[in-house]
Image (cartoon, rainbow over all chains, first blue to last red; front, side, top):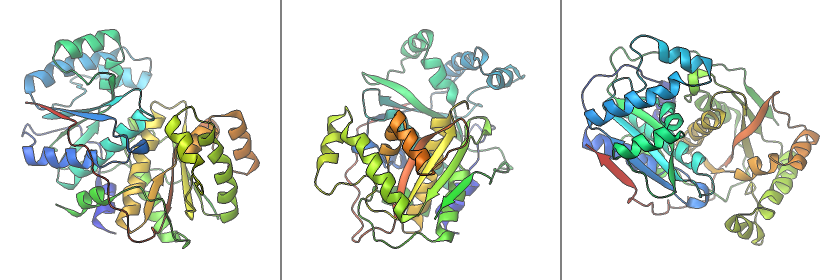
Length: 188
Length: 188
């Protein structure tokens, strides 16, 4: 097994982070990985907003959490009601990839870019967790207003399509849960 | 730069393939990489349909191409009208990742899984190209009927969310086009 595939298999969602910041070189390496994702007709319709400011992260976290608390999905609502639950898990970095909603396939493009960032992070020892609450919250009028109020402004015509938090995982690095293998059809 | 990040930066969309088949070990390695992607609440709401049958690929290709020819997006229609254009590029393998449309975030989950497969493929020397025509064609009533007629049956409640072709690239491996770097905001 080569190193790339080993990284892919080693990745898992991390929900407990050390407070150490993600350094500039690490962040730039992850962002470059994101920018090299495939995109429909090579449109690259994305913008990467990387937030490390602790106070801003705290305010966004408080607000985005309400998207889970008010969700119609039972599992999300129940998760959010657990004591001490946070949607950013006190991670020192949150990245939003916004996309031009008029592009050919912005949700696909931004998601592909985020998986590149997640794998790049894994490869340099950082943990990550997809943060769906950001998209859910921003989809509401209240959410859009709060992002603007907090100064998190996406380019004209953009909306967030992918978000994840990153940081150094609390050890031991959690094991990857068993994955279902009964989901394959090969037609030869 | 580590090997994972080097693979991410080396990947590019390949549109010219040798006829050599993708071997069983290669395919299984790619599928395993796909299965280890993150998914919302670890639902893994996906099914991987890997098609290597040349006759089936040819029939699907002919049909999926009509989705581009009839697209409202000028760029897709113009591309499809070019002489010799094919949506599968004569690749020996096409993989569709279908997802349960009732899951929390099936489009995200299947897209993350496909990027894992694409990077795993890159790491073992295979080229790949996202194949949006599959989703576009299956979204039509005619498309759904043809998939069924050809025996490509997805699990109950599933629809295709991600598709890509894979194979050995014709050398020289195409260079990665320049990527826009002016798409980043860092908030410290």
